[in-house]
Image (cartoon, rainbow, N blue to C red; front, side, top):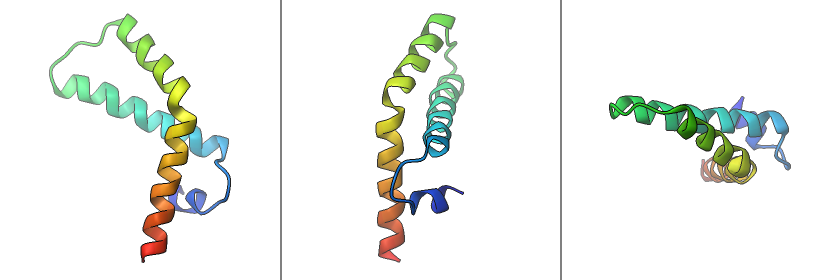
Length: 72
């Protein structure tokens, strides 16, 4: 699904939300894997950061997939 969406010209809201979920999983799993306990305040701060950066992150992921596809 990611490759199909990356081939599109515009960033789809579904793709953006998938990237946001990936960001959230990466950040929370990193904390758990390192033995840290994420406080509710830290979790809220992480969510806010993702909300503000998810569109840019989705565009960057789309560019990465498009570049990989073009190189094949």
